[in-house]
Length: 188
Image (tube, rainbow, N blue to C red; front, side):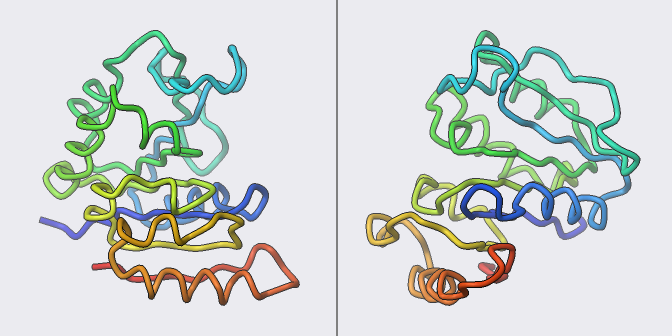
């Protein structure tokens, strides 16, 4: 089995998380990538804004990225994703609601747990590492931190290698210049 990456990318809005995830997807995968993002065109940012409408079959750009948009009606989209996506790069963009939605929680953990068997590399972008529930930290192989504004102490007991993550966050937050600077942290 090939080694797959399960990467958490965190940082404030506008730091370049989504752009980096898409660039890494182009380099990591076989040219076929899926971006899963909230439904900003529908009713806005509903807490369950990730449920499947349908895969959008158009190319996002010349890189081969495909975009999947979700609305709040279908609670089975992760089952569909789990059973039909192999050897891909999957990006859960702005994934905080996805990670904290109890309807999707176990299904998402199964997708992460089966990543080696399915050959899927998985990327999550979020604004604050403290928002990631404790059980998900066991699945990440890497963390990429941009400048963040959250309070890390509330996550002290749920983040493995907390001191390493907090030190990296402090270093990147001290950079007063370019907000697009980031630090890579190897978890596994």
